[in-house]
Length: 275
Length: 219
Image 1 (spheres, rainbow over the protein chains, first blue to last red):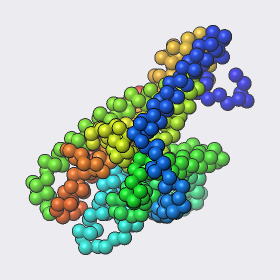
Image 2: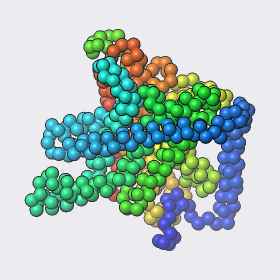
Image 3: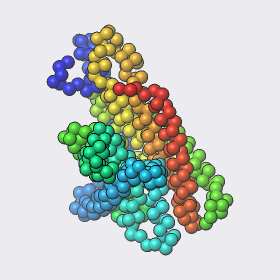
Image 4: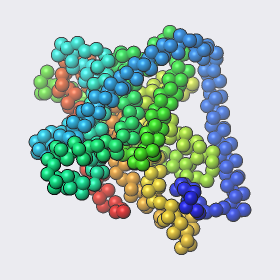
């Protein structure tokens, strides 16, 4: 096993196979391939039997208007996700700075707030912004009814991500900065933060996946995002199964791309992804 | 609405909600662990089709939004001839989502062991099953305590999806929206459910940290 070839753990578990093992692995591979194919065939058969492969369920995807409407929804999703992400970034950083400020009451407060938003489902926060401002007589656009709770839910996680980044900066650097007479605030701003932010960029990108997922419940506040527009199309075309499957695939591809981007950046900058 | 009035009218609902959240979380997590082990075994098996299927499973359920999956299970599967009751739909959703993340945790647990240890084990003459039983599994389990604790909390938060289908009894998030469509619950109505979630999460992470401290491997 040469050092030049990086061996993954799952390959390292097995010795270089002899002829007998190679034979057995070949049989196993064939059997498992058949099992996987049978499973796929069973699913497709179920679609066929229940009539879900009928053209009337799928022809709407050949129409330009369908994709334009879904595209508008996707723009809504992107707008909400980016807004919520930006707010969460600022809030998360603020919470982390408060927690590591060394001022006791402030640190305790920020800790409680961080743990609160990490321990509460985003759906509960979304219902909060849906019901409570209205009960208090405030009129809130549906965009913010969605963006704010999603941002709050993410800010708790991001605060922890930032804190992990700060902890990853070697202690000696902080001690050195303090000993040459920088104040705590200066040390944070000039020495720790620039490095910490660089450490956590891949994790921040990965957290965008959570934000995108959280925006899917936009229909609760009737904000026209991808999912909500898909629901509108379902009622007008009566194509429930096909539409939900296509939407699911779109979401999966978006989030897969975000994850890949995060891994790519981590690889390029040589940092580990903190989750 | 004051706290006494709120709890007097809906106290029972909240209690049922808390129990529903707890029981769905517990049931889900047992299956999450079992399925995560299965998927991980498939992903490290020497059979390529199983590896590919396992990897695909993880990518799909790691990246699909919970609501989208729930809607597919609850509303699209009946059209395909599979009707599940609402509670089963929610639990199935949390299991599928959770097991993908659980398998990722196991994989990174296995990956932290390092190729060198496997080579060392083999060079002192341990067989494949011995390597798995004595080297891989114990270490992988120990390093995944903390990630799995976080996963348990995530599974609990995912059960909030139950508010999107007509569950009976409702779970904590469903209860809040039920209360608010009938009365002006205000901030308090939310705070009760939120504290139930946060309290549970706090206990879970406390226990998780205890266990982790006891079994952690210092590297």
